[in-house]
Length: 438
Image (tube, rainbow, N blue to C red; front, top):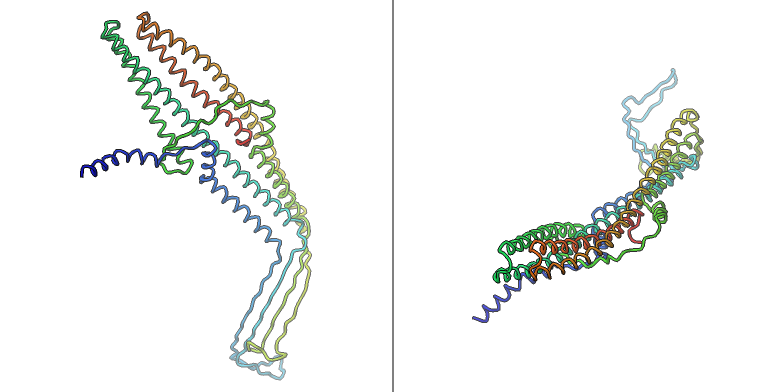
């Protein structure tokens, strides 16, 4: 019985750790991006729009196929007055009732319609490609959202590590201050200052942990993971990436940005639409065949020689001559719409260049911050070492000692945040070129 109770107690103690381990997931940045892409609802919607555009293209292609229709009519007539005399002629007798079966079948094919079907097919195909580029753009947005959230979580976890180191250090300093107080070397006020610093750092740790939980939850949602999953992220390799020239990033953006490619396609689609409008002034040519079945015998299967089945073949040439003077304003409207697209591309190109330049300068600034902060770390470490020695020798006050340690603690956090900001700034620069994965 005692052994059983002991086993149950051990299991109860281990259960929280087991449950935590079940909800813990280690994940790298590339894995997170891939998972975000696979589970993005926005990308699924984009894919559905691509399928819709492809289906629309097939519908337009179907318009070029021959049309065919068939009908079958049964007609029954009751004739109460069945004697008829016209103009004093000998009257003739009509039947009391009559039945007839009439069937028709027709096939029509447009041979030439001014190229309107070809232009419509080309325009729809280009718009289907626009939908594909829109999906690519959404994929980049999803990737960047995951990267941004991943780096936010990384910064918080690095800050927690620095805070934990600082708490351990201040605990040691507090213990030392209490010992000095007992020896009469320092005052009670010095001990209180260390205790106050410990409380402030503990509050900072609580705030960081609260923010970490929020960001962790947001990343779970982005990746399509259970909302209680604790993510253990790895170092996203914050080594500084070598910058190419600004002009190379500009050229890459102008050739790769999905918005600009979409406007190029829309411009080509507008050109096809313009040609289609111009085609309204051209004649159309069509051919067709018709089959008729006429059975006045009243019987569904008529006797021999009591029905006829004529077949007709024909060609149609039609020309809306009025379109020669009524179509010119439609052509002008189409040209204006195409010009709007061209102007829009010029505006979008300027915005892209501005964005690339801003992100390029932002990444350079982030790298410079790291260099300066690494120097400040070295200075803060040396300052902290000197004041620790002076405090132990009762040369420096507790305030000086705390200030030196706070400066070192803040410098370490600033450096970790700067490294993460530099990594994110690099991906931001890549995103502005139209492709995060280079």
